[in-house]
Image (cartoon, rainbow, N blue to C red; front, side, top):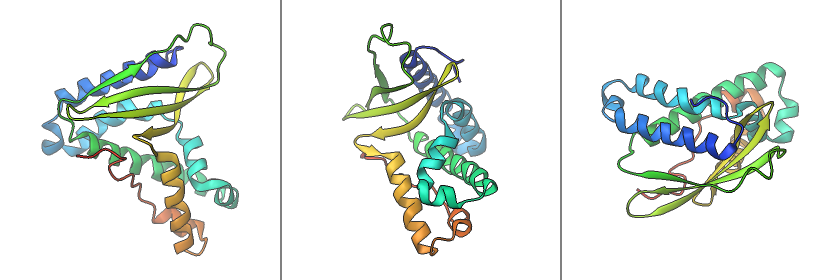
Length: 190
């Protein structure tokens, strides 16, 4: 991961371009050593995300307050692993796509604590909008949600958690034990 950056546009763009370079240089690695490929993706992406905040949002207030501290920590870990595994698998199909960050002037707003950064994923055939929602924590930025081509991943995961909790009659332990992140293709047609 690129070191902490005060400017959120630079933070997102530098890490996105590092991800693109890593994908191009390690494409065959997914077939040869999937765990190593996933580790390379996680090394970049994991520190960028506020998993504690996102996990609490995915659980929703009802289940988050109902869960014990141990269950909350367990869900953060399960959610993080499942999301990063899904993300790495999706990125393994990367070809010659490019990611372009839409930079806006940030110099007038350094006191902001929340911001949206827009990017475009260009597949060669189509351009898909990506919106990162970020929150400033201490002196660095962290992703709190991603919207890809209109698909709000935070909302998608929250709905999945609620449906799974309903399936298990509100039992938080069973819901956490049976969690699998599934954002599908996140609105991007192959």
